[in-house]
Length: 168
Image 1 (cartoon, rainbow, N blue to C red):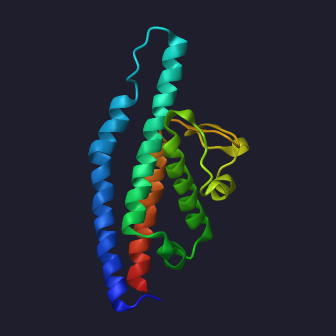
Image 2 (image 1 turned 180 degrees about the vertical axis):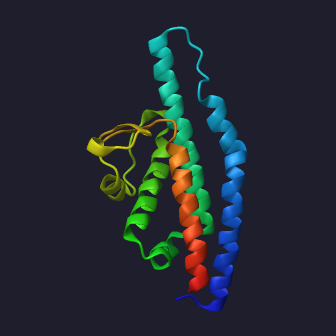
Image 3 (image 1 turned 45 degrees about the vertical axis):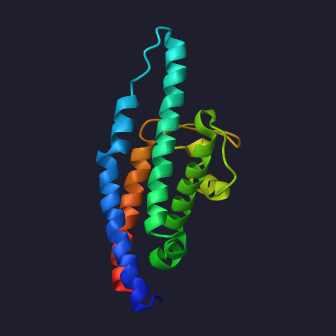
């Protein structure tokens, strides 16, 4: 349980998180995602598709890393389990943390080791969502829509956290 001071501090932080999440959708992150969607203009269609896929992957990965950094800054991981009491949601958030850690590898698609087990429990190569272009033990490539999916889940997690902390 949280003491009153910690609860008040967490509520203020969650309020700031909501503002930051809304701002991201309309600010630099939203511009980055929309402006790069069909940005590659190379005449060779195969090369264009390859470069565009790498760009889509990297832009979505960067956006996810940004969303998770903001989320965890305002709502530290130490509160996730006790606030949500929902292993499926906390596992999904840790899976998104895996994608955040993968961002350090840029265009390459190389998977990080951090939170890999949680990611593999949530997403598998045989039942991957359409916003994962390809997935193997060694590589993860995202498609357009990945950042939007993560944003929506994180926004819902934020809404649930507001209610849960208020009821503590």
